Length: 69
Image (cartoon, rainbow, N blue to C red; front, side, top):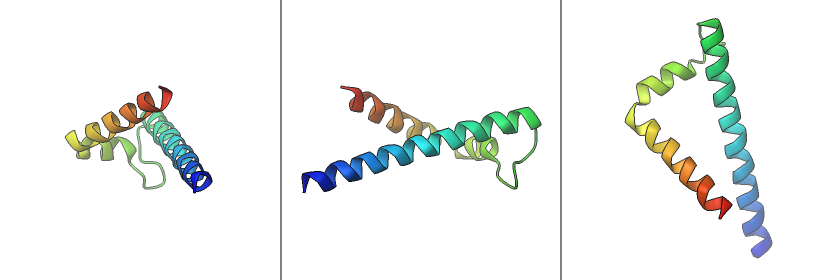
């Protein structure tokens, strides 16, 4: 059971890191080309989400801080 727990945590950690990497890359590329990326608008999505996206960022930061302790 403990192996399954560690496997799930490791998989979620990798998925979060991958998603944040793609989000950061998408934002940087969109700012450089000043247009949507194949129909994907990460900057527009962040602007539309407003306070809810900030809440997600806070949760991710808190998770990362908790993970380091």
